[in-house]
Length: 327
Image (tube, rainbow, N blue to C red; front, top):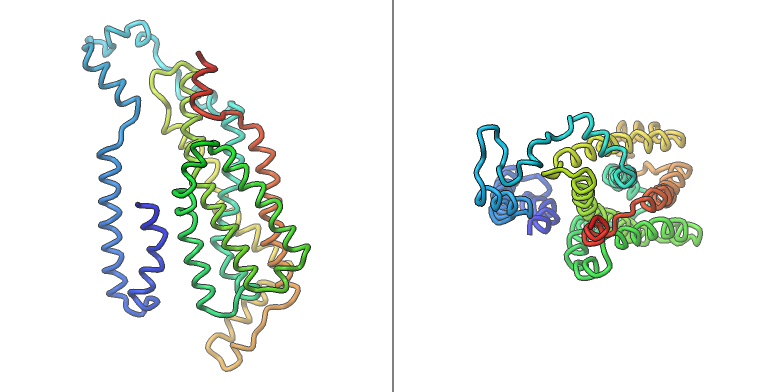
């Protein structure tokens, strides 16, 4: 429910505020969404529990703690302290599955940042000329990922999230180059919008599944290193530390490539002519338009190839297989 609320929130706020013309309505809409978000977060936190919470509750119920802080029923395990923080970090970082995942996740965030920052720019010379069609494309991009994940839960449960992510990577590698080589995107602006919606939606839907491999990594680290409790915060924090720089790196790389075809000059001319009589006559140079098309088609394909390589090193398929292997 929270995911669906987020997906249509931008369109909802634009609608009630008349594209931010009525700022008071925009504020009231934000307040309503904030209340809904608070309710969903409270319900999720109030009624959620993990297997470790149940284990700890049972442990506290069956035994009492001694003055040293150890549990009598588990004195042998408690007497041995956990490894130091540096040792724990080294144990996590040196795992092959963790390295494979963070590389794949870094590239996934890199591509998501590219689409988030440059889709509207690519749409100007390549997408539909109608503002209504563009708004519809942006609405679908925000709505389809959540619907795809919710609707695909039975298939994900049956075949596993690993195959779902793998399928999305294969699509990225094949779709862009195939459509570019056939000339479909250059001939049809609507087709470019459809391709952009498909790429952005599939990328966001696959990214929403990445919490599942993270939870598997937490469980694997706990079993392999015989920890009493999982290091969830450490694993999630290390993943964020490695992958979040991709959000800032993607715009730098894409802008540098666009500037090779005069993007900075084009934007300066567009800014200077804004509001003037000849503002509508300013067109994107053909070389720059071709570069945008190449980036939209081939950069996701290159990223997908690198992700296929890194994802092939991730060998954890399910928690049941992991537990069976450890037993």
